[in-house]
Image 1: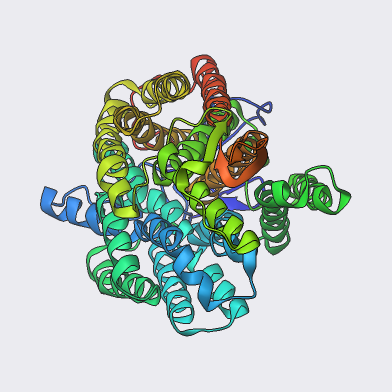
Image 2: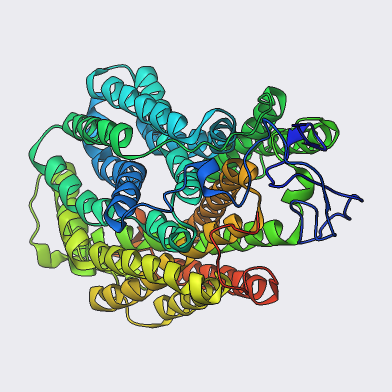
Length: 578
């Protein structure tokens, strides 16, 4: 039985063997296996890749019991939840981590930045490796690298080694990319859209456990306990993955395009680095935008080289086809709102209220006057006014923020992620995406104009969770419906890059709005002319309001993109078209 090859020397995933009469124009939506034309049937191939419709060929659990199917899904999802779990916990612990590295200063934020940079840049590469060498195998490799990173961070006193550990932990981001492929290959087709929805928003472990457990460990133990907890969490799940989750039999028989992988990962990493640090470096400085220029140059070089490669890391005709490129476009803009929502809610509610802020300034001023004059003053002698408006601030601890705000956002996101998966199976993933973009836009406007109280934040944040869950269920389902199985890993990796870039751009622009609107204190001592001073790291209402409106505008662009999108209007099939 003869083997059939596609352009680029890749084996065709088809049964029976099919060959195309003509090459399609760029941008056709019916790209696989023969781009919508009438195929010419030949004898079935021997040693060909995987028949797209054959569950036996991928290891699909078509005859398994519901208990078996959902056990596999639960273990996959719990393993992928380590990435959001660690993010919430490590972010909460930054202030406690700082004394262990006293010379680092403001660069302490690299503990978070490096995780996102390396994870986003490596995801397409690891996704492609999972397509070639096996998804479960790479799933476990990512878990081993994450555990190694946890152990290094838990014991080291060196900042360099700490960042190396965080870089190894970043491989956890790629587990979500691999999980989408495992779910597509293993679950019966009717369960795939639902499974993707659940995988995208989790089973509640990261949503419920991370804010509460993270806050508790930070307040009661050393910050190193968090890394040991994450190590133990992964160590418990590791044998469960080995025992419960079967390996997908789907393989792409080709060599890894190392040059393309390096160019893509390097280009994405440099652009993301500029977006993350541009505010600190200065957006217009050559030493700053040089990183972005270099990154874009690598991306352009990637496109040029991959378009001529016989075995590219990803079929560029597929990447630029509307059914893929439109999803990436919508993901970029929708992620603006997701990034700013999470940042703003945590920062605003954990900031002190206006009365506490004024009291702190009064006490600081009294101490300063006494040190200079040696004479104490009554508190009534100091008058403080805040300008411009500052109406938010609850002084929440991390635990209080978790109970009042984060938990409701997370729970509704988890519930609507699963419901959106069911909806996608019945009506297509485009409709949940429309709902997500509309909800995000409405929440941005509401945040901007309603009073900045924690009650309003709780209600709006809970509503945002509906959009959040629907979005993360819709986008990977759209990708699954758009690409053939052998491109699943790298396509999901590209989706991850666009989402990371969207979060980075959204935060960078919103941070610029905040820095342009600081809160200033007008301080008058003993009736003397007031002295105006800027309060560091405290921002006026207007800065947040502009940021929320910016996020709403980005969500509106995503909504327009979803409205014109032709892909995703039919019920999700779990990828049966490919």
